[in-house]
Amino acid sequence: MILEYEDVPRMCVNLLFCETGITVVLIDNKISDTIYSKRHNNKFQMKKATLILIAGTGLVISSCQNSSHTDANDISDSERVVTSNTDTAKALEKLMYGTWVQPNPINEKEVQGFKLNKDSSAESINMATLIYRYWWINDQHLYLIRESKGNKQTITDTIIFPVLHVTDQELILKDRDRTVSYKKL
Image 1 (cartoon, rainbow, N blue to C red):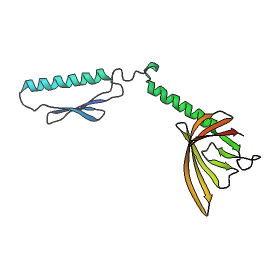
Image 2 (cartoon, rainbow, N blue to C red):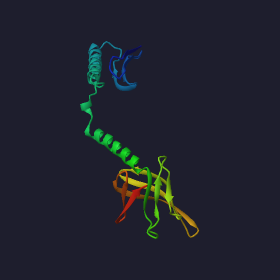
Image 3 (cartoon, rainbow, N blue to C red):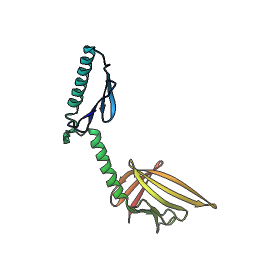
Image 4 (cartoon, helix red, strand yellow):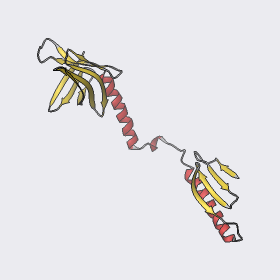
């Protein structure tokens, strides 16, 4: 015979009375406690088992009474940080979309750089031997997957630039021991 008590928020307690005289308490369909009460005339054992069962059920019910209660003030600081970091990451990613260029060091009349598309693809600008393929932002770092072509070979690698500063018009990255500035077209 199975008795179900579903008044407890988000938890179901099942009491199983088996023919062998074993009472099993199931919480969320997992065995939490087993009480053996052998069928004999020892009334003390039966009373003890019943009291343990009642106490266990009462404990489960009382511990679950406030489990469905949530309050805006109950949000921990770590959850606020995660939300804040997520918002910051999304804002940073939106600022990154677009074409970023800098003066070409070989010819000052030209620019070079990259374009970061919303679909995470990337494109090189005026760089025939350095081809950007994909990009993403993680933890204030810009990741670029690029192919370097030269000497009859192609090398694919991922470069990581810490983002030092970004606005809707300017991007400053850290490249090893130097800073690199880009303007948005």
